[in-house]
Amino acid sequence: MKKKILIVTTGGTISMKAGADGVVPSLTGSEIIKLIPGIDSIAELSLFEFSNIPSPMMTPQKMFDLSGLVTSMIEDFDGVVITHGTDTIEETSYMLFLTLQTKKPVIFTAAMRSNEETGLDGPRNLYNAIRVAASDKSYDRGVMLAVNDEIFSVREVYKSSTSQTNAFDAPHYGVLGLIDVDDIIYYRKSEFRYKFKVDRIEPDVDLIKLCAGISRKFIDHSINSGVKGIVIEAFGRGNVNPEMKNGIVDAIHKGIPVVITSRVPNGRVLGIYGYEGGAKQLEENGAIMGYDLNSEKARLKLMVLLGLNKSMDEIRDIFKEDRG
Ligand code: ASP
Image (tube, rainbow, N blue to C red; front, side, top):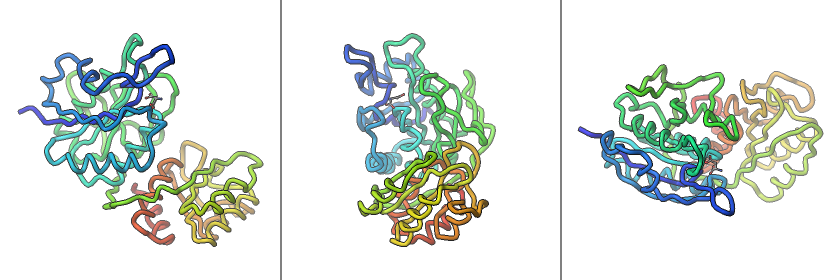
């Protein structure tokens, strides 16, 4: 029997076409599906148009609302495919990874080429994502991204090219599987799993990226604005300069949780360096290590944990468990 798959469209280049003013949202959900001839033979499809926006317009609240929508509809389906812009697909998919309770496949997909270009990747990616969502093998593997004939864990993947169709990568971790013409082949299961039961998030969490010589003016602005949490994208192993360290300590003293991530794409932050501003000092002063989670994902996780009213110590412990 054919599987029942819900397609939720949100926008992004997969729904765009070039006009006189450049590439803009143009195609409806049913127009995207019509680009894949014979798709009805793979699965019984239903469509829900959540939005038609470029993904830089996505917000954490919209991501959380999307998670709620999937929760409310998934009961009637065997799997869900979500189309999204590549610019923030990592974040939206991770929000669903953190908050969805289901074990059914929820598969994100996207396109790098807009619909007037030669060699469209959108229809192929959508076709493949539907196949992944309809496969029995995809059950209980967490939220995944299906692009460029590959399957990634959304906890592990990041956008690594601004323009090429192989725009996603998961260095250190690798792909979960391959989408071949005859079958879906999984190589491994991701170790990362987190399902927070949450009915609100705290959207007021700032992210500050460090560069050499940065002053504390941005963190002071965050503190003075009454922000509820801060992520610091630090250097290397999680180190900052002395001025920023003082800003971080002030924020912590005011009760604001500060999560440290790294601007280096691979590896973990850890309290190794003991000099003024080294991550060891930050840890000793109460900063929370984000370990291998990238800054954008650490920010969403902090929003979820603050939405659950977790204390600073509880947040530290949950980040340390390192499984989400
Ligand atoms: N700017 C587009 C978006 O994220 C890029 C894409 O979809 O590939 O909406």
